[in-house]
Image 1 (cartoon, helix red, strand yellow):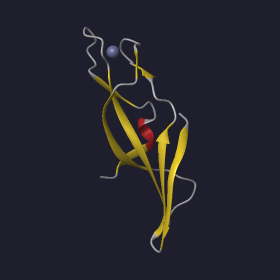
Image 2 (tube, rainbow, N blue to C red):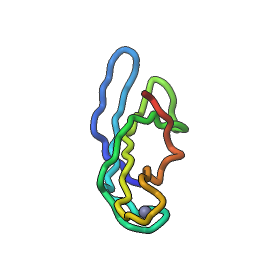
Image 3 (cartoon, rainbow, N blue to C red):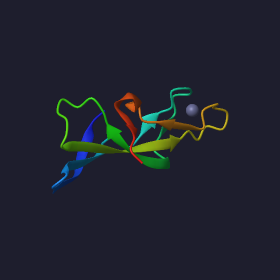
Length: 88
Ligand SMILES: [Zn+2]
C-alpha cells in the first residue's frame, strides 16, 4: 500500500508524521466488490519502523463499507492492517 505524507510537526518532544493512504478504493475480501465509501477513520501508530524515538508516525486508517446486500462482510479495513496499532 502506498502512503502520502500529509503533515510533519517538529517540537521538543520529537518529530510527528501523519500519513494518508493513496489508494482511495479497495476490493472486499469476501465478494470482491470495489468500494471507497468510508465507514469510519481512526489514527494508528505505525510499528516496526527502522528508526525509533523521537519519531512518531501516525496513519489515518479508513474502514470502508461493502455495499453488496448479500455479502456477509459489512465493512472492511485497509489491507495493511498489520502495520499499525490504535493510537487513540
Ligand atoms: Zn463484500
